[in-house]
Length: 363
Image (cartoon, rainbow, N blue to C red):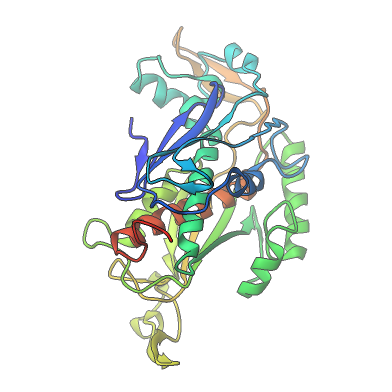
């Protein structure tokens, strides 16, 4: 199993959904960075269940603990270990359906790959619960990126068939934490709540789309040809459970354009070379071009639903039906938006260190 991401800013994830804890070890964080549990807690709190009828009823305290790598309020250069304890755990529903793989989940593939020794409770390592550790790593990465004025944010742009209107960056910053959907279009957010509520009432779930943005990214991040910036960002984003699509800039719409429409013309502004459009999403040839990085992430509907679905009993090899019990999100998109920010921050931080833009000691 591969549990590490990054080259110089390396993040190693540990823990399972219903195990004792979930967390992360960060290796390669420069010394001298002011870092406190409150810095990490602020981001972890943003990932917690937001509202009844949308998120899981599971209510973990998620109190962040720093076990190593920080002394007198600053990073020491040693590995940083961060964790939260799992306390609100109820595995009874998973014990009942031990041999019935949930359609849409990794229950079947994990069982085969690991010979049945995998922790099946709550999905184990394949649960969205493990992303708490990634958010903690993202909090540290964001602080490092702030030293070079890079900002990362993400917001919900679609839930089911409801799409938000495009908003300016200032509106995204202002509105994203003002509603449980993390949507910058407040009117669309209200309709999204209704769509999620309807799906939950029918024992079902919905997916959606998240847009991630990175601003003030220096030109030159990326290591072609096998460690391109969009390739490594996509790798990190696809690690998020339920992510089924990642596209940059104009994305798949480029197939409908001519070169004259898709190309981003160059111009000068305040002595800098910029592009007049951003169909490339801030990346050319696998290298950041100085424009905002724009990525959209497609998130599938939550697989755990109470509607009855066909499955197979893996122990008796007979066909069966399953209605998933337990505590699940009717839509994970709003919580996943925080994870998208974290994974973008971790990846950009790693590339900034590779480029020598962030020093080994922060003073």
